[in-house]
Length: 502
Ligand code: AHR
Image 1 (cartoon, protein in one colour):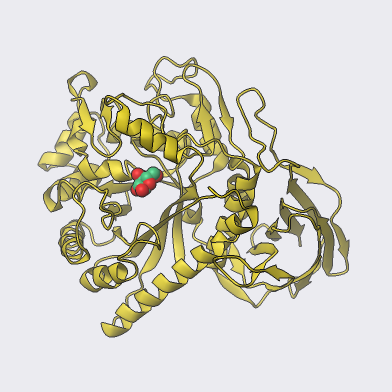
Image 2 (cartoon, rainbow, N blue to C red):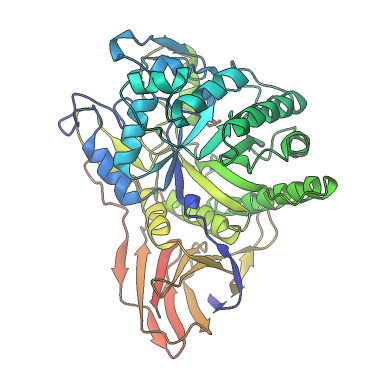
């Protein structure tokens, strides 16, 4: 299969917000306890955080991390997680039917985030609680001192405010599974009033209002229209979520799902424009795609186990073990975000450690990179700069979700400071290589090219503690420069990063 891809210096999409490579940690399963926090672990710091995990997160270079949920936040009392650890209550977490010891709260998470080189993106509880708890939490986190909540923070050992910029107004409030689930009108009103109170404290904060939990929700996309109509003047982002499943084990259908993601983004972008026009507003609202990933490997087992268990603390839950096929999917998802980076400004892989995550840990033992760590890592490290509007000419196939799915999924980023052009390319063809001709126009001369490939003959291949590099990137020498073109051939079902030095 031949593919011709043209990048032209004048055809750009947007300057990518680095928070496109954000992540998410929820009090869920072993994400926090024995994930990032394990006081008895051989690498534990004096504050109980695992240094081995911090090292992997630093390497991943995720600029923002959403916390503390997820479904968990909708019945969470943030005050349970402050003050002396021995006095913190154990609570029943209604979202995951587990016990929460509250040994990690905002202070511990903030210290971890700083060590891991990531900024906090905090969610307030608009399920079981509301405006009052939210405004107190914001004051606790961001006010320097001289008020009840900020002075309490100081008493608890943190003099400086954390100055968290990005705040989520609840989580998935359209979902009947959510504690305190609301109709769009009820939620829109509450979110707007909460946003006004937070803005009265600091109108520079960035606020994220809940959109749909996924695009198959019965209330989608009317939910977005109603909620935005109620909140448009107060919010900066609308949050979307999507998880990708392959229960049928049909790779071509699975790898076509990013077309559905693209339509979801396009539709919500249209709803934003519709509400904006109706209000004659000059304000821009963008998308925060703050939960996305492959999630199905353990999902049905987990749902059954959860129904049967007796409120365990930090159980194994949502520990999907990813395979090579998921590398291709994660690559296509991130490419979709890059191509939509004019409207998707923030995106968070869900989640970061142990729970549907790129990083796995063993209690008391090793930590390692899942297969999906690699495409995320390469994009996060090298996918910063200006997203390019590529012209792509290649064969396509028909799938359930779209009629013309290009076999070659490719996104391009120009980093003017580094003088590089980086392309992320997934060959969705199962039996043919893609012979790619990359034409580079008006960027100046090409000095060199590097090709990094992730390929495994077995789509089911996984990384484990004992075989952590089974699926991993390797450099090849097969990309060649011909004048202002680059030529290379990428194998069937493969992920590539092509990096051109200008
Ligand atoms: O990430 C797992 C769960 O998925 C989150 O708690 C929730 O927001 C979503 O339904």
